[in-house]
Length: 279
Ligand code: PXP
Image (cartoon, rainbow, N blue to C red; front, side, top):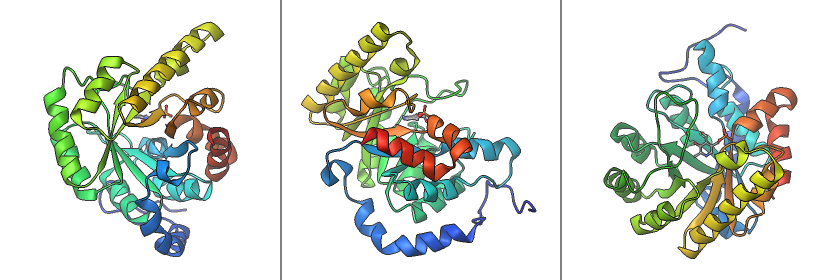
């Protein structure tokens, strides 16, 4: 199949399937997108992070695989949300992806972003259902730690004001740390996404139980502060269940493990399998 166009500027969807499915779902979109997941039911909702579909595409600077197509298949597999991270260095998701996904995703669209003025401006313009503020460091392979709301309070507060003024719900990505959760409540966040990376990396039953207990304690603090509870990072088919079972867990954002499994079994099936584990 000839390669039509490298993605980066205005893109053309490579498949008619996406357009057909989108057409079919247009009516459902308006009602579903704006429904807060915790109001719909009490199970943890699955946000599928499609960044690494774009990582494979960018490895060849071409137009496939298309994260827009992956998002459609994720919805067909039962995803409650689509998550993407528009990084300042554009290493995976491109501006075009956000533009097209903003028009085509019919479930919750969750944009991860750092508090860089340029990206905040793009977010305010594209109006995802939710913005998850994360720290970003050019040298990192993936988001390494939670936000430091104490050290960067002013900058994050400014980004939050712009996003809230644009009508976007805000989730803050935090380590399971008492001070950070208290600061999130003071800053007026709507939700906190607990960073599960340390839990995911830890080996040995006792040490993993200790990390899970830290998450459970932080989850209680998030709920007690009146904030919606999310979690994500490093979650896999093997380690997700105890996190999904934490009291009040509303949303899990999972990317790498689903994309890795999708290579073997297909995107829709990989999402379906994860959805069964979290709800
Ligand atoms: N949540 C946040 C805030 C993230 O930054 C990421 C990684 O982009 C994820 C969840 C998904 O992490 P993973 O790809 O390890 O599932």
